[in-house]
Length: 166
Image (cartoon, rainbow, N blue to C red; front, side):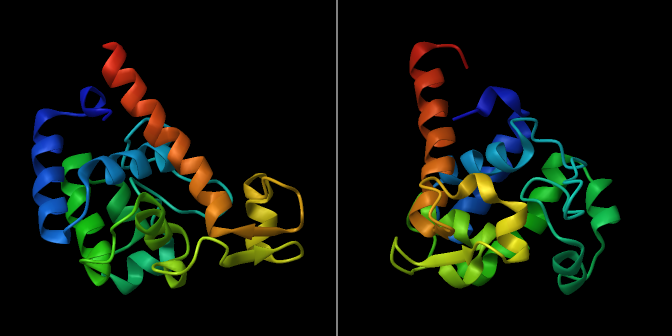
C-alpha cells in the first residue's frame, strides 16, 4: 500500500527490511504514512516532541541508536530505512499485528500486550500530547484506541490500491 508515493528503491528496501524483521511490509508502510502525514519525508518534524523522520525518532532514541535526530533528518527516505530497521530490530519476530508494529514505534512496552492495555492517562505528558487518541474520552488511551487510528490509515491504503487511485 502507498507504494506509488515512494520510490521503487524505497519499496525494494522496505521489503528487504521487513523480511529481516519478519513483519508485514504493509504494516510498516501504514505506520510511516501515519507518522509522516502521508509525506514519507525523512526530515518531517513533530513540533511538540522534536521527533523526526519516517517513524518519528525522538532525539533520545536517535542518541541510543548512535546518531542524532538532525543527522537522521538529512538522510534520504531510502537511507533512513536502515535506521528504522535498527530501531525495530529489537522486536524482530514480535511485530505480528499492525497494532504491535505500531506499539514498537509509539509505546514499546505495549508490544505483545492485550488490546485493553493502558498506554497513558489524562494528566500525563503523553496524554497531553495525544488527547485525540482517547476515542471515548474516558481519560485513558488504550492500545486498542491507538490501533483504530493506524488501522484507518492501513485500510485507506488498501481501498486506494483496490480502486486504482494509488
